Image 1 (cartoon, chains in turn purple, cyan):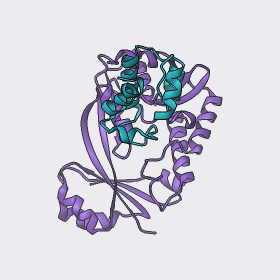
Image 2: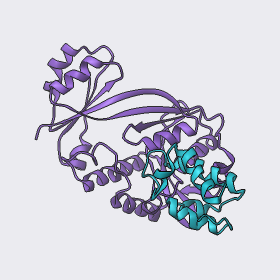
Image 3: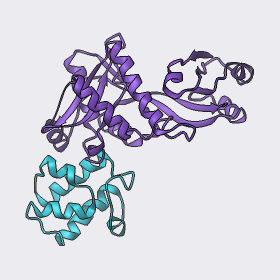
Length: 241
Length: 79
């Protein structure tokens, strides 16, 4: 069992938070004994697929299942698009953001462009907390050197993607989305196709990302762009306040 | 086959729904009409009517009814 004191969630959500990852060798008996000793005001438990006894145990211990996190990877050998997808993607460009673009992005996040994450859907939290968590997350990653790009159609900013190097020639675009006015535009695939292009252009060998099972549309767009499934873990939460 | 029948058939076959379900249908109202489904629908309509839609129109194609207005711009009368 790996326990991380997620101190950033105190700033984001106003609660203490431990993020606990169940490891392959953790048994249900061990988890039953150790988990209660490591709980916080808001506890997040990540369970690898196949640990069914622990999934049932978590229910017994008062945890709620909120999502599964699906790791998808792309080998960056080829971006396969049909002619229509190619035509539409060719009409969208991307460029690295300046400070004004970042302000625009944060305003878009405050408008509520993300509505499926485990904070937004949790009645213990509110949409402002969910939005601020994203803004703080992006700000922290920018301080650590990640890149952030805007997507443009004609002269309008329509969305964004982040781009992070995680070593070994692997990039991890940890967050992407369409802006409010373009959420229903059908252009969502650009939030995946453009980072793929950037990854190939920058010489990466692999693209790795995590998709929430609550966001099936994004999952389906990754499948359409030939991502491969790598692994999945299930996320449970518990509030003790 | 009339243009309306061809138009409706594109929705039925793309989203695996009935003609009845196309009435009032809007983007994302069913799980099949997501961004991937949207591209499939537009491709089916371009094939059916031998047209090539502008990206602006692909973006604006937000419902079954709105699509009829958009196709009129390409001289396809769907009524």
